[in-house]
Amino acid sequence: MADPITTFFDAWQCTASEQRLEKLDQSVKDKIKYDDPRTPQTIDGKTALNEYVGMFSANAPGWSAQVVGCDTTAGMTRATVAFGGKGPDGKDMIQHGQYFIETEDGLISRMVGFVGTGPDLKK
Image (cartoon, rainbow, N blue to C red; front, side):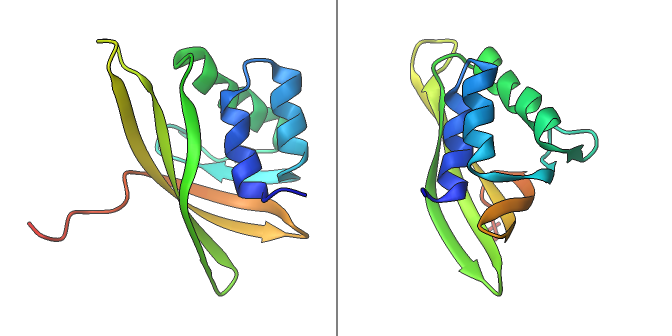
């Protein structure tokens, strides 16, 4: 079985709901809890998460979500993800997000995402 975090973000490219759900079945628990800055409240469950992830491919056609860094400490995984594709001007764009992930029985059970990779402490 592939890494559930990579498989989860592979689902973000799937335009067909059935194809996304297949990836989610391989990566997340049925009762997944998911939050990120674009969710006004916790997304609860795989069906709701499938709909939410589908908005990415609908609103950013041709974009991908790729895990570019990952580490685990004390059962908590931190993943950095590059979201990329063509911008409105036709040029390639990349935006990063960072996720904190808990797993259970080899599947993602809780995920919290943030825009960027943290505050710039050099200021």
